[in-house]
Image 1 (cartoon, one colour):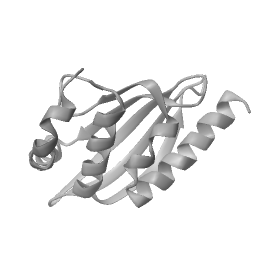
Image 2 (cartoon, rainbow, N blue to C red):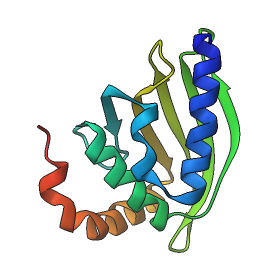
Image 3 (cartoon, helix red, strand yellow):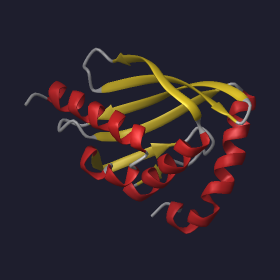
Image 4 (cartoon, rainbow, N blue to C red):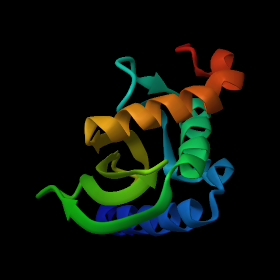
Length: 140
């Protein structure tokens, strides 16, 4: 299987996991050196545990979440998934920027979000949801 086919398969699995909010099933599509970059934190989160906690919880904060456009770099090793969602009463647009390794696994997952009012709502909601996981989200 080519790298492009592996990446396509990973994306298919990602969409299925997201739809079911089954983030505990992410391990097979995450590289060992996975790094998650949040739009509200300046420090990246390395490791599988933080990304699973973050994505499981953000999937409960976003309402009417929809991917509506996919863009890829020329080499196919990075994909941008453009989305829209509601956070409280704020309509937001954002992107999930995924970078893959040669095995088609996600090695970097970065989220960007706008407008600022939506980002602030995300920070507030996620701060409340992530409080119980504070120790698990500290960089190792």
